[in-house]
Length: 366
Image 1: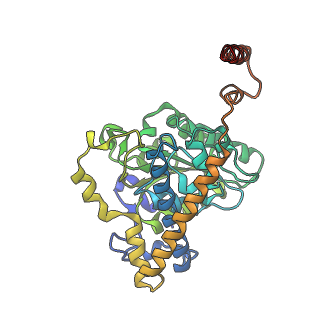
Image 2: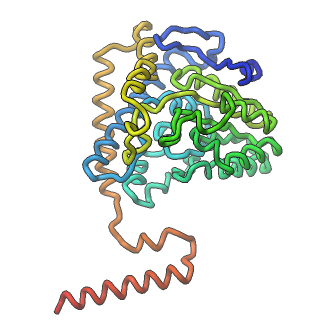
């Protein structure tokens, strides 16, 4: 796929599979993206939805803290991360549960992170994924730094950086894009434009017609893709990854999708959008269109779908139990995980805390 064919100023975006599962851009489909691979990636999308629902259940039961659902953004998560190769890096924000799992992060660790444990950020050796980043857009700088380091070392690793539409209003985004453009770093900037930055609609983020066209000002390509089209997301990301790996520099991808759920479980979306708006978007569900396509190919049916979904629901419950078993109840964790070497003021606070605990125990003994 030629990225230059999708100049964002033209309004053209990458589309391969329409809302009813019809192939409308087969010429853009990479050869490697066979029907068997589409089925495999769809399977991961089903897994992600089950994992997401389990997280919501945990949060509602008071067993997990605030959680950002990925409902409606499964194709953007899975299709993009699947385009990476061994040795590449993934820099997530906070709504990339599926992408992180696909790149080797155990689901139990993602649950553990949202349960408030520092150990949820300790990934297995060899998993090239940075920790979840809740601060908006700061991870863009980290991802560019990693890619710059890889280039200086002569490595062929590409760094895929995720962020939302709201992040494009931050100074970190500008600095990361500018540095990447000047030094031609092997980055793919992947914007999950779900139309809302918490309660702020896309229309209030920027005066430009698209987010993708911001790349032009930094000297590299930007393109739009139907973010609910699994095949299109994969094709666009693969093309951008290949370009970066061959020394062509960065690319900005704006995946146009929609957040069907709340920003996080602490959010009430009914305060800033109507239920009718959400209902109008439901037919664009990314799982629905891939399911229709695979059904027509005879690769999936109701029985297979039910079996897989139930299997993943059981898996997610098991991962949740393992995560809860890993939670540390040691209050020292509040002090021990801020710095590699604890500064004097935290050392004093920790000692003071232990003196208070000792005094309380003495008091309780009478």
